[in-house]
Image (cartoon, rainbow, N blue to C red):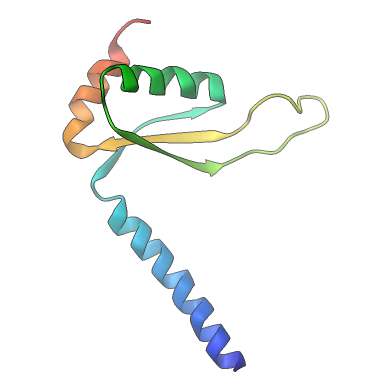
Length: 95
């Protein structure tokens, strides 16, 4: 029983990264930012031009006593590869 559980966990640790790699191959990282203000500014530009995107948060940061209200979250914003040129145009537009 223990070997079966170890085998299932090992399979999960191998299968999840492979699945994520294949599911992300049609998406291109267009922008990375720290903090939610910049993140919302960027996605507002993409939404206004009708560009589909998805976001991953690989690093959420942690709060210190001194700046516990500051957002240290890293946001990676992805767009579909075929819409990459449209996303670049949208991000280059002025506010």
